[in-house]
Image 1 (cartoon, rainbow, N blue to C red):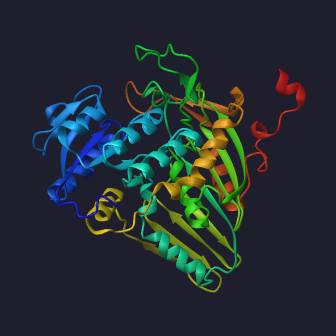
Image 2: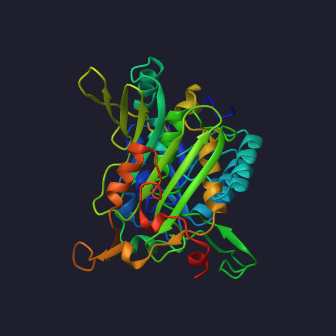
Image 3: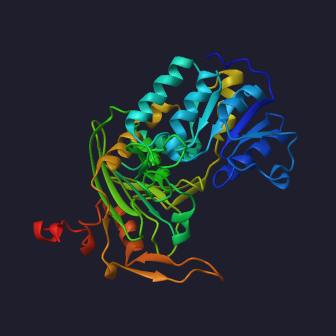
Length: 406
């Protein structure tokens, strides 16, 4: 790898410093204080104000990532920009020999993912995909428990994500809540020919970690590891993409994986993955790095683990040759799921009697839509490895030909 032997602190450019990018900005501040990085530049359409860059030295700013990388001599770029821009920006950095931390999903389609992977490989740069949960030390512990037979034969893996998002969440950016957008024209506006993929659905973006973590625990992470994918995609909000969905994934080898997720829960809960065994179960709350083991003949055992930060792991890879935790190859199966969702029929709008609108919390807050009983359905799905239709949700049952035509 061409980057090995880099001398710290490593100069970094952050592309996309607002929204989720603020998390990266704070992480860079922590690593700068530790002497591991310098923030060389920020790529944003609107420059950050001085208070937003507190704690950093002089920082170059601009809206052209390539020009900013050239001007700063950055060795690492963090790409935290709208989903449709990921591939082009990643390739712009790779062509300059700049290593990458690329936010999830790495691309909006499998074709774009392949193009990105090929370009990164040809450039000989390192690329880490930002599935932070895959840096959890709990993963190796759970794999050890399974390998030692602590919960017997593994029967399946179910994930559950019940989150609350108000209607303003789907207006947070022009691409939010879309499956596709008109392709930009010569002036940069949506006047070009055709469309670009976005695929900003609940399973592919906000709760993508539930999918990737469940796949990681199943061992089916490669692009060729999956035999079948089945989806149930719905939306309660007035959006194009899905906000309440289920996916069933059948690996070529190993056990079935299911994920039920919603942004229309009554109460926000910590997302989790359950490994079901013939003599017990392991529950992993992946945002908290918390593991609960329940098995026959033993009391419950709960443990909280540490986590390796993915940017630190990338820096360790560049300076000392440490293995990357989330190289693009580890996200191949996830991208197969993204592609299946992209190619699926548009999500079905839930009937008005399936959800209710609740006022926002606080003055001026946007209202939010809650799907009736969805909290229980999401949890039941992870327990039973069953989709919404199989659990008896009337709004999820297959339509008859007459209903579909109406």
